[in-house]
Each structure stands twice: as C-alpha cells, then as structure tokens.
Image 1 (cartoon, helix red, strand yellow):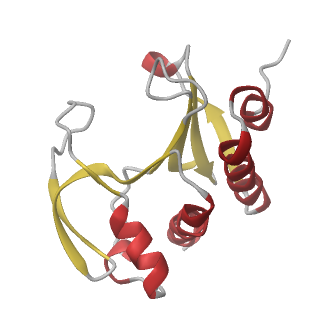
Image 2 (tube, one colour):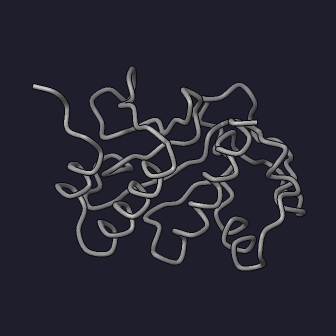
Length: 159
C-alpha cells in the first residue's frame, strides 16, 4: 500500500488553524510545481518531508515536531545559501516576518557550517543556521512569508 501524501497526514495529525495553514502551504507548493518526498535516514520513521522543485531542495516540513509533541509542525527553508536572500525586494511586512523567523544555530552538528553571518533582505545576522529560516507552528500571518521564501527559492532554481 503506498504511503499517504502530506495532505492526508496534515488532516490526520493537525487541527484547527494549524491544519488550515499547513494545508494552505501544501496547496500553494503543489500549485507552484513543488513536490514532497518523505525523509529517510534519521527522519524515516517521522512525519518529515523534503520540499523540492525540479529535484532541488527548497525546504523541509515536519509534523508533530519536535518529537513527542502532537498537533505541531515546523517548516525550514533549504540549506541553500541563496544570494537572493541578501537583497531580494520585499515589502516591509514580509521582511519583518522573515527576520522574526531567522533560524539561529543551535550547534546540533547536522551541517558542516556552524553558525555563519548572513545578510537577509538587507540586514546582517550572526550565527545563522544552514536552514536560514524556521517557522514553528506558523500561523496565517506567517503563511505569506513562507510562500514568498519558497517562491524566491523557486526563482533561483529555474534560473
């Protein structure tokens, strides 16, 4: 029996606004040519997906994460260090939302570069994780920011 798609797991594992926002993001991503691939290795027995466009990584989504939490979800942008993050033109509201979700390095050891300096939409940040942005239980207000970040990554991939 084939594995269920991410939308089925969202409907099964999340409720209320978390379910609504995560489904809206999944629909946005599929509509814009992104695909979802279940994680392997450490992530194989978890509800974790690689978000890809044209077989290149764009981000990651985990349901019931951190482990042991239910009705929770997290979105990370890809470890790709896009130069577009440095100066891509954004409106002030999206910029502020992105800056509020910078993923600072926790020295977990999962990436080669531990906490680097990055310029993100015109503002410098120190000790930034390789995934750059992280959204824990994002709400409807964060949806536009996540959609924008994935769109920027897609633009870089198709260039």
